[in-house]
Length: 290
Image (cartoon, rainbow, N blue to C red; front, side):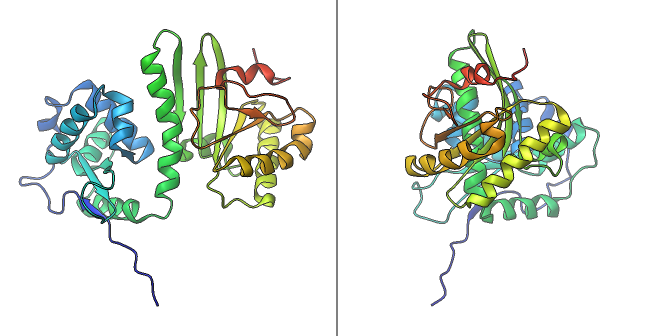
């Protein structure tokens, strides 16, 4: 018996706006927070309502009202799995006018409606959607923590997988990269989000890639692995500790599980005792830059 996959419920532009795309009509109505959100979506593709609330709003009701307004104006599109209404979060991404605004700002050609529709459809149906949202969630939690502690914490860099490739090339493919500072302690890190499908040889290959990246670039970023369970973490720790680049001190690798807050003392460095806060990891690296 063939298993049928539900069709996503998608709300986006399906017809070109009367009179064509007019970004200038929207500029006077875009608040600084709207522009920031559009820029983030241009870089990181998709967020849930809860993630957007954590990024930029104090109340989910306020966030929903603003997001619905931006959708009605053609700046944002939303989608979710086709299940009973109210039981699934909306996911938000750029619609035609949102993408056109970023293109105009960056002096790029105005995107075609068919291109945007195809992009939204692919994103809504992608088997990697859950992985992408989970990767974004770590950075969202850091931004939210910094919003609550603006004098002591800051996420000063947040790169997507595509951004990372500009530095790492084909040596390794991180899911993300960030620079996190808290109480004066600063750590630069690569993120590997494991959903439980990674094989032992794949993890070993990644470590070899990060080791090669150090030799080619001189970077000494911490490598973070987020795994789905404590059992998986224990198994991964054994493989990490045995790797020559980790045992020899060239790589600092730390692990945690998905349901922990990334800023907290949840990171277990391979071959070192105890769990540490994210900002404290850099001080454990024998070759960490000043």
